[in-house]
Amino acid sequence: MPAASKIHLAEVSVEKLGDTLELTLSGTWHISAPKPSWNKYSPDPKTINCIKITIAHLKAWDTSLLLFLGEVKSWCTSHKIICNLSHLPDSMHHLLLSLEGVYETLPPKKRDESLLTAVGIATNQAWYNTKGILSFIGESCLGLLRLPTRIKKFRWGDWIDHMQACGVMSLPIVSLISFLVGLTLAYQAAVELRQFGADIFIADIVGLSVVREMGPMMAAVILAGRTGASFAATIGNMRANEEIDALEVLGISAIDFLVIPRLLALGIMMPLLTLYANCIGILGGMVVAGGVLQISPAAYWIETQSSIDLTDLGTGLLKATTFGLLIGLSGCMRGLQSERSAEGVGKATTSAVVTAILLVIVADALYAVLFHALGI
Image (tube, rainbow, N blue to C red):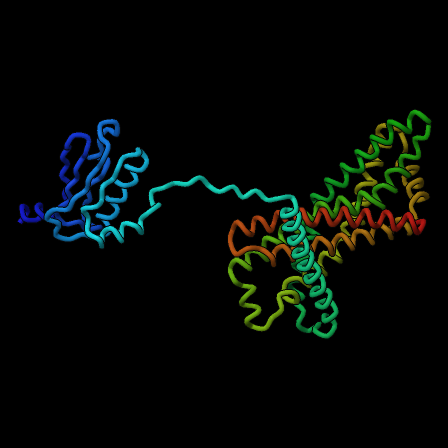
């Protein structure tokens, strides 16, 4: 039995006649059985000019024989040697033509984009992103308008949890950053004010800078990196797990269920965090004024009260409220736009932080222009 099976194996006989190498194929060629490799029989290309392939005692064959012939033909083409296939059956010739180019490796085509093409693609993508942002903002505004009529369906528990996460849990980092910012502003101002004997005005510089600008801005940057990223990661993970699809199947709006509680939480806690950051920043300036300029805390506090009025405080709180809504919108929007994979959630988180900080800076610049025009 072993001898009989050996007879039916695929075989290749090689005979060299002058500058011609004759290959004789015989036996049974099956794709699931061992197949002879052309590398075993390939000669030195310099010693031959032609390879002739013939068939003898071929029991059965399939694509394994065609693959072997394709290797031989490709080798002959690469070495500029004649491959004589005239002794093969017509059916084998026809099938062999379908393998043309299988072993050829062509260089990749260069697809250089022109400047106009690149600009067009970028413009189209920007327009698509703009439509998505405007659509999400519109749906969020409609959700806020629907809230009074659906107050009984509002998820108060989630709202309180979000307020705690973005408010109370942020106090340590806000305290540290605000104190260091007030400290830095006071040190920078002390160097210049000491030259003119106007040490007491350090309270004016620190107080106005913190209340109108640095307090809201620092709190916004902290929450953009902390809360905005958390919102995007949570909602993106829900999207990857198809939980948002389940809500839509049940007829529950993702905007009302996920976005509105987070927006209201940030819109309320952001001004409160800003007030806290203002106090800590002024305290940092008071420490420097007392340690470097020998200004008493009472004198520092009286000068701060005289330099800051309700207008300054109101502009800072208005900025803080706007920043909070922008951070919430950025985090929720990027989470809902996340791809359904772990990598997509990571990209959405990064994009949420970048988008939030960018929008905060743009809004701050617009407020600066507006307040200057109004004389505030």
